[in-house]
Structure formats: C-alpha cells, structure tokens
Image 1 (cartoon, each protein chain N blue to C red):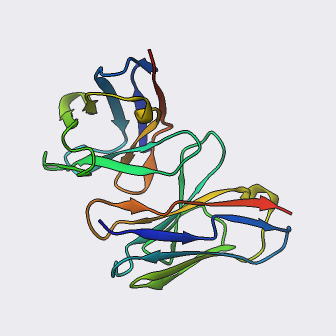
Image 2 (cartoon, rainbow over the protein chains, first blue to last red; image 1 turned 60 degrees about the horizontal axis):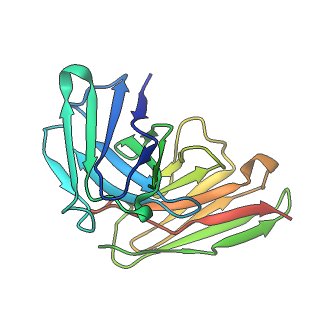
Length: 112
Length: 107
C-alpha cells in the first residue's frame, strides 16, 4: 500500500539548515508528485513545495529563497532542505503524495 | 495566490446534528477543492476530493458540494468520532492553499 514517512532532526538551531527525508513505498516517484506541507503548533497548514514526477520542482514564493527539494528515485526518497531557520519555522512537517496520501509528519523545533 | 476563507472557525454541535462548513475561494477554482479531517496529533485525512467525491473508506454521512468559488462540507448526522479540525484545500493552481480550519466540538 501507499506509505510515506518523514525523518529528520527534531531540533535545529536558529540560522541553521533543516534537512528532511521523505521515504515512500507503494508507488513510483516517476509517476506521482510529492509535496511538502508544514503546520506550526496549533495553527493551519502551509504548502511549501513539490517534486514533480518528471523531476521538476515548484516552491511557495514565500519560502522559495530558502527552500530546496530534491530526490533519489533509486532510494524512493524525496529531500527537503531549508536554510536560515528561525523560531517560527517550528512545526510539524509532512510529505504527501499529490493531495491524497500523507505521511505521519515529523516535529521540528527551532531553538538554541 | 488564491485565498481560501473558511467558516466558521469554531463549531459546537450535538450528536445527530447536521453540520455544515464553508470555504470560499478568492477566485474560480472550478471543482479542485478537497476537504480533510485532522484529529489531535494525527496527519490530515482526505475526506472529499474534487468538491463532491467521497474518498474510499469515508462514511457516507460526509458529503461535499459546490464549484467555482463556494464550497460546503456537510456531516449529515454528527458522531462523537467526528470531533476534529476540518480544512479545505484548493489544488486548482500553484501554490495550493488551505483554509484556516474549523474546529468541531461536541456540545
């Protein structure tokens, strides 16, 4: 069945770079888009960016200068890197297949 | 970016009540509107896709309607397990954008 699982550090220091991995199974990264979405504690959801099935990327303009999404199709993994982290980047980060299947999310805290 | 205005932000209802939640898009999104349910500590779960299609495995008491700019999620008879926050999402154009959410509680 379709599964996505996010992994990465739970704690990142301010001004540092966040690196997250989304490992997928049950579908091919060359057939479906994978997106990244985040949610600050107690708040709403924000669409961050996507890795398209053909390798192209799209980014939310609000994050574009800090965000990079890449993939390794041989490992069924999609990567998110975001630099210059601040405390308001704290939240749960999700990867999703298109708009249907979601990973469980990974909590990231930005704090010194 | 398309703005999604969701209402109400908070809703209190009794078991068996009919509940409606609305989302209004700042421009035409055709029928590219999904509804999600998020329970505390869990990932969002897709309930309705493309405005009115029920996702597999979702109870039939959930339904969606609308097109263009105005959309509605209806729960025909509220059950205790429906306590959650509900979000709409437009996926007509990039970047996809969410409504701010409706927190549904039992009266």
